[in-house]
Length: 276
Length: 296
Image: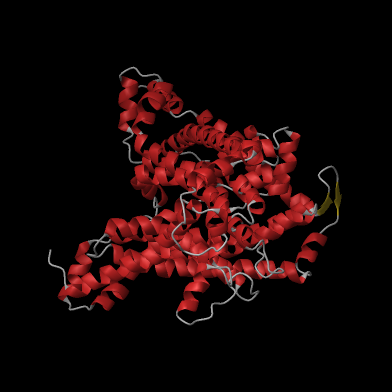
């Protein structure tokens, strides 16, 4: 296709503008992570005087008794377990909700929308978690993440299940499948594309979550990566190289996810945009 | 069909889609989300120490609307939500139109605009706090090079809330853009064909075809970013902690501050206020956006 001169100039302008606005802040993070303490204190956009990334990394990781390691283990654990539970529970609800029409469907859909809109009541939740002996535990945090993120996952699943023909279920029954097999052996495998979307979108959200661990997961032994970064802010207030090494470190997991699952993330986050 | 076959078929259908499939999700959701939400309605009317609660009627709410800094938090929340969702709609739409046209390096542009959506909000907040430093920050140093004295982005009480809102837009506009792209590519090409035959200009194309037909996408972007803006906490907490003074406090940061200070009843009342604020603003907004859609 032949491109006019105006569109080439426009393209170059767009590339330059997005580079300044969106790329330079990330380059700044990377450059700062390579600097030593003295140079990073200037906080300018300059080439590092030497290669200090590895010593910065070591310094960040061993701060406060290797807290960063604990944090990464905790955050990974919370993310993996709560996303697994979310997938199974949301797919079950989405399946029955899309297939069976009863007088309860309206109520259930209202509750799902309410879950997307209503801000969680934090102090009563803390009070309840204390009563259940779940406050400040990873178990409690996982269940909270499941409860808060269920509505979004259910919506994704329900929309997808509605596109799978109902005749498939009936054919399976005629072929001798037991009811539970229909869901676990036939429907669940067919849901794989939307399951991948769910896994990717929810993992990024839960891994990056700051507010909920701040409220429900106090204490050093329960640190998550976002809380650790927040707490190190005061510790590293004069060591900008370490602060930005820490920021760089927690930006890597989303970057990896982005490189491999770009398409699924966009699909999940734009679901429903066209239908409204 | 015989009389006995009908109930048999019904039985079968019912067990194919068992009602107990709702149960595990319903238990988790009811116990950890619905129960505290209902409990908050009561505890917002009490002076509460977590161990015992004294009923004090609407005192917490009265305090919320009496204390100037709490009222400011309420006003700030609405301003923040309006600014961020407004800018995300306008910029997201512009970027989406650009990215669906024949522009070079589309993959690169789309990636760099979208990537900030996935990055930790705390990390973004801290990075921009450094970049927005009044004298040492890169933004003002760059402005100084071309002879402009940059403002005190986060230290000027008049500006702090807007600066945080700008960072919010920086981080979130990628999501608005991909939603708009999904909406724009779904517009049938016939409309543009018809407009071309009628001799429409590019501008007319945009205002009479693209804009009205991407209304579902606009509705999604506004609803999502407006709710997100009203509930915002982590970015504000990472950048200004509501300061300077109370200049950039929002209801969510007030809730956290009252919780930290041990005013559990007042904090819970803040939660109820935020809930009512969202219900009062978002429900009519979505109804308005969807009603317009019905006319097309």
